[in-house]
Structures are given as C-alpha cells and as structure tokens.
Length: 94
Image (cartoon, rainbow, N blue to C red; front, side):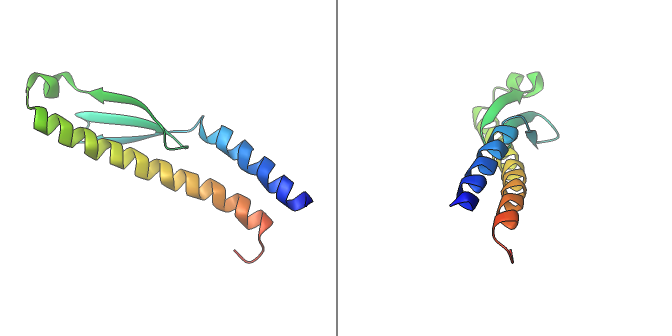
C-alpha cells in the first residue's frame, strides 16, 4: 500500500509542477499564439493586430483552432514525459 500512496503523492506533485510549465502553439508565423500549461489548460491567446484588422472572421477562427491544437500537443508531450517518469519509478519494466 505504501507504493500506491507514494505514487499518488508523486503524481500530485507533478501535476502542481505542470501548472508552472508553459508551452506555446503558433499559427501563420505567430499571427495567433496560444499559451497553455503542462496540465493542458489554455492560459492565453494572442491575436496580432494585423490579423484583427483583416476582419476575416473565418481565418481568425481557423488560426485560433490551429494554434490551440498545437499548444495542446506540446502540453501533452510534456505531461506524458513527466507522468512516464512516475510510472517508470513505480512499475518496473516500463
């Protein structure tokens, strides 16, 4: 039972650390930038003034989706790497 409790504590500590890690996804050479935490939560969306002035709603929406997905992909990679370390320490052979 001690191993399970230790794993839960380590997992919680990693989740707290992941909240402090930021990753970014961009679309169209930075016209849209999205920042997310390692816990896959979006914390900021920046849309360039140039893109906003284009008044092309569909393009803005498409670029936002693309940038969000890229940020979340980066966050997922960080999350998986961190969690893999916990599992490796607790489950031999991983």
